[in-house]
Image 1 (cartoon, rainbow, N blue to C red):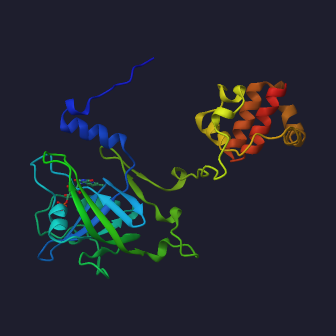
Image 2 (image 1 turned 90 degrees about the vertical axis):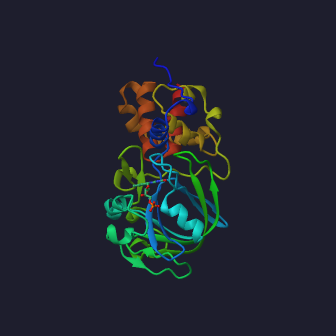
Image 3 (image 1 turned 45 degrees about the horizontal axis):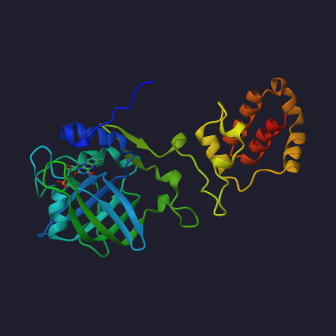
Length: 297
Ligand SMILES: Cc1cc2nc3c(=O)[nH]c(=O)nc-3n(C[C@H](O)[C@H](O)[C@H](O)COP(=O)(O)O)c2cc1C
């Protein structure tokens, strides 16, 4: 078996550290941050060291880092220190190329809304404008900036509290909910890679039962130790509230009698593959009844 590559991150160069970390931690959402300096000059830049960290209060955190090239701080960092407000706009596929252009290291005072062709909309509660092309924008006050170091690559966590959220009507459902499918968000990966939250990339995973799933440890051994079933398959089975009763197993077996007869002599392998197909369709109950039937053979 090949060995793990285990790395002491403090013993490698900043370039390598950057590359390993940014490739491993992804996809990352992108905060397209609009800020103003003390004179009111507008700045716009993307930050993928970003996430929501609290919903009550609603807190978003992003991190402009000290430049590894020349040790300077980003304009966004200076701006939030001078004027503690930011609008965090989210980034979706139709705006990804323009967003990337806005990450160019233009000189201080250059407005990236203009350079990258975005439209400013005045915010209601803060000075920085929001991006009209963004599906969602958050007007925030900056609560705190935590400087994590002084060397190139050191992050500065900008802890921001959302004062108001704006959602573009194109991305709302009839019930005024945000629609994941039309949002088409993009995520940042390592190198030049991005990904798109659309099409086949989207899938749903049922939340664990509030009534507590039985857990993989309580599955019968022949299921737990199957060579066919994957970790995802076992995860779905372990999320069931209880193992099926003998009556339930018999019911499924009689309903599927024709199909089960076709499975080449009902070998455990063919039955496990059949159960797997039901799991793929989200039907854990039928899958479990088929698998429990193997035990009875
Ligand atoms: C998608 C994307 C994500 C980025 N994320 C970060 C980040 O999290 N931290 C950072 O310091 N720079 C990040 N950058 C680079 C900055 O956007 C870039 O340095 C920009 O020029 C900073 O602008 P400013 O000096 O006007 O704030 C990112 C660039 C792109 C394209």
